[in-house]
Image (cartoon, rainbow, N blue to C red; front, side, top):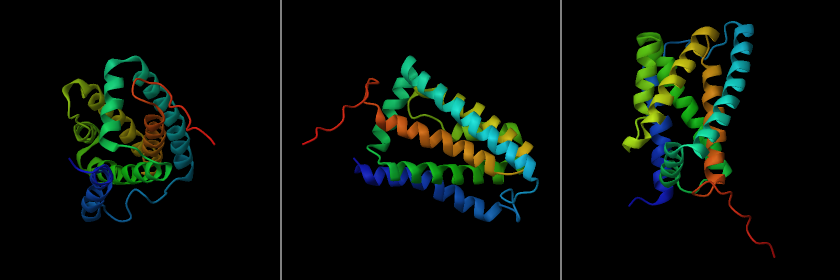
Length: 189
């Protein structure tokens, strides 16, 4: 079995470096990272923050109240292993930038909203059949991310939304013990 830090690096590479490589070849300058309309960008960022908060709260509820949510939590915990705050920040930033550049920056302008969202969902295909709701959630989220990108005419709101969801859900993932119990603090001297 691959050592835990190596597996985490593999996940980071898959989430960031591969999409960045693809994006580098197909992202047309100036690309969607340029801010065109500041009001649309501000509205998109506000929607991203509010939407991110709603998704994070909903994700936590699902993870505590459904069998597939608990199973997904345990599977992700097993794949990622223990993560510190720095690793969570890096993984959330890298996956948000890499995936959004690839899916909304490269694919969305060429394929359109629905095909890109479908591919985004398939990119999140689970390794166990009982986790297929995660793929369906990614499909819906892909539609939201694409809509946000189209409306704001910028990738920044989608990157922020993706980051907020990943960052806070990863923190929640490592802060909960299997079975949903909060870990007890380490003993103090």
